[in-house]
Image 1 (tube, one colour):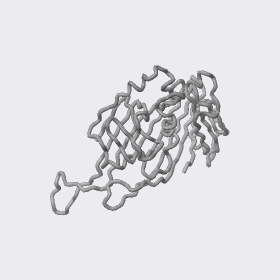
Image 2: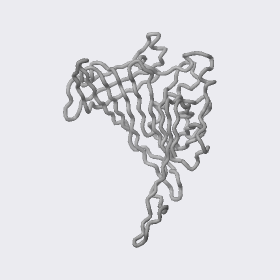
Image 3: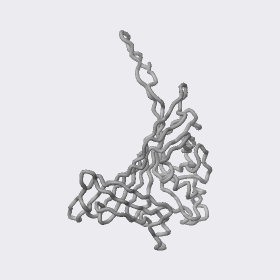
Image 4: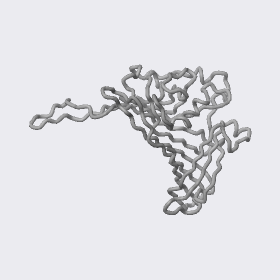
Length: 290
């Protein structure tokens, strides 16, 4: 099964585990998809012809939900700022039952974040690409994708600041390290979360999902690359402070934002590029979070 939709509202309560979201707990997604596959292998018997539809279950069934979000925050936002920020800062941890996501009439249970990517590009709103593993497929409610009309929510109060995004122009950047670019023109942040589901005999979905590891990688494009790294890389610290776009308008961007992402790790790769446009560089910074 595979469903995909453009400009779809996603409903999720990332503040409380295994809790159905309210109508105010919606996320705007520029794209979203959900897919499932059966884990089958053909049965083979020596001396007998194969049967075309004879297969055996070889493993558990896991759904894959992916979406690219535009986090909406602000002092008078109806989308619950804390819930929007939880998507970015609160889902890489260990959870007993996972979270519930509603997507176009489909209710997905026992959802666990597997990867998260933030793209910070010049003059643009910040997008968040999130991938989830969905373990409890036996309790999916809904039989078809119906979409969701949230136009009445989007136009409520008629205020542009009512649904306010985090923006590249409103990001405070600070840090230290001799192997960082002189300027920070584009930054991407990636989390990779490894988990192990635990199944009881006779169950089709896990009783718990154990957190194994969390790794964060930050890529920075800018001018030059600083001092070249050695065999063990080079220690660096990069702090990003995220603000609503209105903070840029008022000129009050600081290094203490609505939320901060601080990376303390090692520069493990560098790339230096010389062209007619000038001298460009990029580095990759890795942090072992868990």
